[in-house]
Length: 254
Image (cartoon, rainbow, N blue to C red; front, side, top):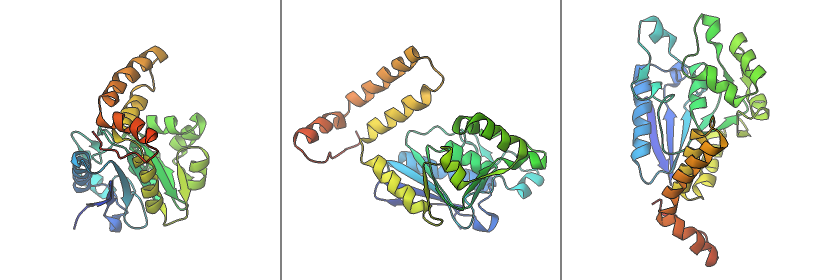
């Protein structure tokens, strides 16, 4: 039994939460396995982007409340926080492929990803208040960044769920697809990203994340610093060369 499976499809790594009998709820074993899978992805030079999916009828039901009730601490890792992911620094992009409920910590895992593809049966929400708990794995400040203020506040205070089509309309979900198609659609989106120079993609992602709360002048400083990393790469020479030679670029990732 593998709590998280890891496979590759070309330059796409597919990480699958594999505890379907518990709706992929997070216990300590799952948290450790998610962190290990992310470590493997980050260290795999041939994998440029990853998709995170869930096996079974749910993406993730959040923390395993049986583990919480038995006194299990945190369900976290030292570097990754809850589920080994919500505080984990990554260099490469990660897409959530969501089928069925992604609730409580499941929503917080989704909010840790860079892009979201959802099947029509997906649902998101932070129902912790219904159990006299607090969503303390990032959801209470990340959800208002991903949704309009009052929508996020309503979800937080009522513990209600946001259906996939509404989440798509409000911008939480990038691609909405038929139920059962999220993984394939996420892999297709991953290939769209991988058509681009990976060093430039990673630098652009870092700039985006680092500048959200900076002034324009500070943002320009970060952009200039990160751009130098791209300008020193082999791929920086390949881009103009491919354009001149009227052919698709052959990215080396270095």
